[in-house]
Image (cartoon, rainbow, N blue to C red; front, side, top):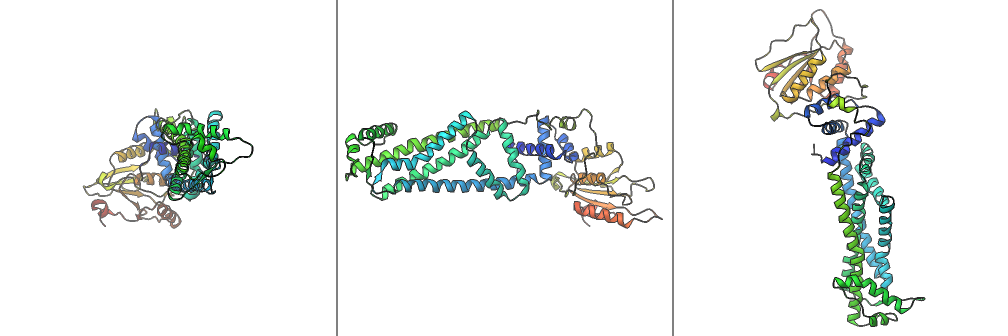
Length: 457
């Protein structure tokens, strides 16, 4: 399993909280026990519990699929931004000769309008970039191709909205994409000007030449501080009738246009993208679990109890969860035999080799709790669980078997023979076979002592 970041841990915790809020409590007996065994403060235990439940129910895999889809969606948006920027540059220089203010409007008009809209939204409502954000989230969900990923996006948005981090996350996305578009336009503009000869004019019907002179000089004031040329008054006046066939005039107009694009198109988006990313990084690092939210208060007694309890009180799940051991061979040692709820008619334990330990019969909550706590600290390499198939494979027994199996490197089930003079119910035995097959645990009607002792059949 891939190591999760702190943000992803909080994300899965919020997803589990929302799921339990709408669908009711999950079957969390083992998750609570593991969270208690992990120790730490209450927020840490809540996250440990939620991540375990998420992995068990497939939300962990759905999160990884969603992140893959999000990256692919971001790549598509980046490509779109680069192509859009290139399109702006082509549109700006599509006329012959080039109308400088028409070109400037093509390069900066839409960008500045959306920039002002973004700033107003940030100041007045605190929300911005909703369209691009929704598009990215929608693409991420579609590209993930996982039905469970639909539960993740609402949880992420709700979690970020509480600390108003969504504005900075979306601000980073929006300004970053526009920065790429402006850089693409600037790069293509320089390429076209370096490989083709352009003449520049300005045209008007109702405005005078002084208006264009003042506007050109005003727009070129800041770029001039960075070393970009500004056309002289004579050049500006002369360009009102036709494109000047003078090399210095063409170069002055070209550098003025590049400088205005850099100062009013690229730099604002760059500064805003850096600001939003800085605020997002700081807010993300300070993000913590809000214990006042509905659902978390109820977990305090279960995860940090004054007196711990064992028992199964939740509704039965529609399908048993496949057992996956969380114990590696390097961290486990020895062999252990344990029985579940045997009656007094059966002599127990059988003769065992010296290398095999006997955990006795689990017939009470206290004995179960004691053994599970022991296994969490000292997991066995091989575990043999003896069951009486005369009893029905109820949910409690199967949940206990699964929990024991997850705390051992390898597990087998021993379905005991009926005592002399009795016969096993074939239907009930079939129920045991079906249930253990769903758990994907190997079983047999004779004790695999050789495997238990040596690890080989």
